[in-house]
Image (cartoon, rainbow, N blue to C red; front, top):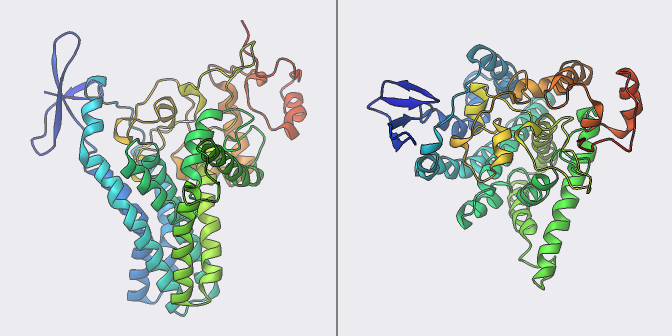
Length: 417
């Protein structure tokens, strides 16, 4: 018999399994039913090439925007239809699952594909006669797709091996976001769900205001962290040892190369591409920790990050194309854990759809606030108490007044006995 998410099911001879023994002495055989489906995360960033192919066949420029339809119409509908998967691998097989090279090979394979997609899209935009709307739309599509490279860099950058960390720096050159893995690992994970974190959205803060705080704030924090690291080693921040500059050098070579190869059209194309690649990360950061707050103890120290300090999503389709990024609660609890082993927890803050659907909600602020503020206040560890929420300072008084509570700055965010 096979163990699958706490249930025993018949084994599949065509799929690899993992054998372990429970504390009771009972032997289990676990099969990851999504083993081959994880390859969707590798293929997903190739969507612009599909649009190019269909455009070449039909001459219809609308096909270049196909990834927008697949991502923001088909994706949320797929998540709604397929629903959620709350199954977990048994703890006894997690180590075996983490060590299975198949899963990490997928994260290696996707790295060159991000470059292939950008170069192919730049070639198409630079050599075809496109209407202005198709050109701009295709640049947006390519940028959003390159933003998925940040997700790849996220998975690789959390690992200890020098190979995976090097691949993270390389792939982050595609969206020109080489500072991410430094800022994310040593900044965001330290400050997550606190007012000090530029990558944690606050209640009442819309995504557009958040972007103006998050994008420059994350870069400044990354630069400060890397500067401190180099100074402790007696090296200059402007040396070749600067890991941010290493990735940015690849970005420079790549984008200047595209400019020289395909001409002046690359200036607007890459400018739009870069902005929307960054916007992809901003969208993810916005929905992942909105309003959630780690409380301080009486000594002023923040409590340890818990699973309920992240918004989670178990929606099947979007997890399969994002290396299960949406099981974000377990990721913050165990940052080194690989995507295939991330767990579901009961009673977590839960998004109403996968990330793609949540992004659409966030892009309409009044609708986001209407849906998510209610969910935030109803969380078990908050129970309507606004002092346990990370609130936009500019909206603080208005929010407290709206919900009939007293805005006491002395007790805000302080754990009560």
